[in-house]
Image 1: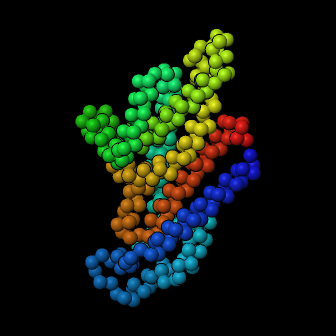
Image 2: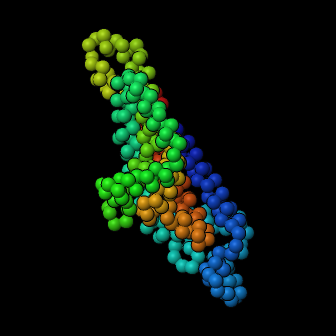
Image 3: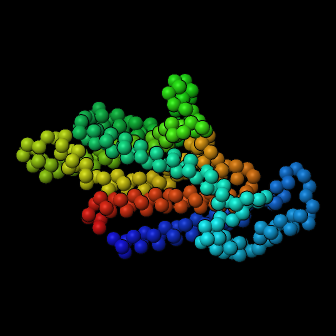
Length: 305
């Protein structure tokens, strides 16, 4: 377990290094001058532009800028924004909203998807299986921002059951965004659990338990479901990147003010440090979520250890 964990942590570090290199290279290659963009339509003094470019190190070669950025990352510093302020402070203010959204979406994926799949396996009905397969195709065919907009207009604006915006509405404002974000993972989780529980239920030891008098429901929920849980956790890790990326779009629809809003504003303002910092934090969140669920999967399944 220790050797595996060290290997996974090493892979995570290499992944983040690759992400930082690609992001900084993309920021370096962005067209236009970010310093001149600070002045809007005005014509800045060329001396001021040269001073600011030197102050932010924009005249240095790319490798020098990248190594300086890595040195700052080791200190927990994502660098300054153009025009004043620190990238770390801006991300720290936006990160709690993204954490709440992604955390609640993962909770819904597990709390709804696993029981739904187990219930579908327990019914062993063609109608239920066909309905779940049809729901999977339908959900996968619709972009997540369309799902978010439909939920917002119907549940929030027409029916008034939940807030349509996360601004000032507390945790209740995250229910609809999390549901929109978790809808695809819930359906995928339900299908995986249904297939896994169904296969385990058809195994020899489950048939022996039935013959010995154990109720079918108990066999499914206490015995057939347990071997499927590591695979269910692995699916969460596999969906981590998609979940975090889709959260950027959902935040915009529901105006949650998380990292998604920060990134889009940074792109519009050509704030390369903010763009790089936001992408690095999102990548770190994805890697951390994936690593966590991999550890939980190994703890749940002794065969993996």
